[in-house]
Image (tube, rainbow, N blue to C red; front, side, top):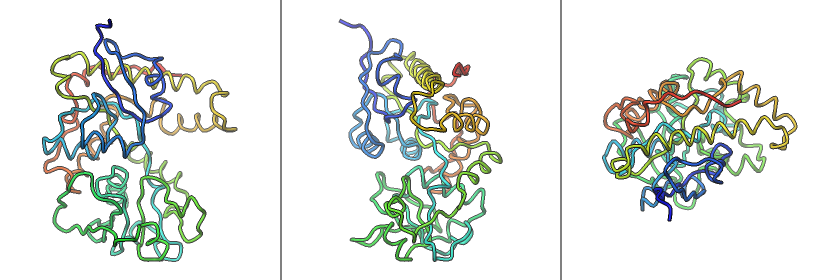
Length: 327
């Protein structure tokens, strides 16, 4: 019989998580049961039922619940999902919105207010492009996972029953749409929908070059009672996720592993633009992104006070700066 601590992990089915999920990488002292599932289901199950011992979780929802003291989990500085969001901002092709400032005074659709993707894009619009977020009429597609009280001046409402934000954009009822995934009309090639930024990749690269921020979508949370009982657990989890990520990037050196003709060129471009370890699992190199998200959380009503990045994570998990060992 194993004397290891048996834990459940819920995470995304990503290449940087695969070595942990399939057992190639172990968490020292832990017998792991790993489950992969889509983000909305994983987040909902953690919020509603607290089913997992370790879980990849929405950064925005984590901050909201940590501020309220309603989540018996604490994060460690592991960020399995990051994504630039300029390419997920859509407008009606004939709606007259040509620049971010043109969204002022318009209606803009979201999945929910607290979805981390929209949370980041709103902050970027305000910080980087000078958009007045309070001038926009915000419409959400879905019910919030957690009720949010917005600060004074924001306008937020649900879409009318029987309608949806994608259809409303096509019909010219919305000036823009921020969505965490590609909306159906875009995937179907509808010419009435276009990206606000025609060359979104170049705009995302410009944003990174000027801010040093690669937006963090998710963090990793651990059941708080386990951290109190096993003080070694936080750092062991962090180190295992680092090894899993490093092994994934080492495997990318073999061109046979990814069936894309110009994958090598894309990998080299990422390294030139973002550095050798853009998915760093530690605090200091992520400080610009974490400080930004702490500012946005207060301004957009997710937290009542301004957190410092250190306050978001278990103290034992931030004491060991990593050394990048990937290729």
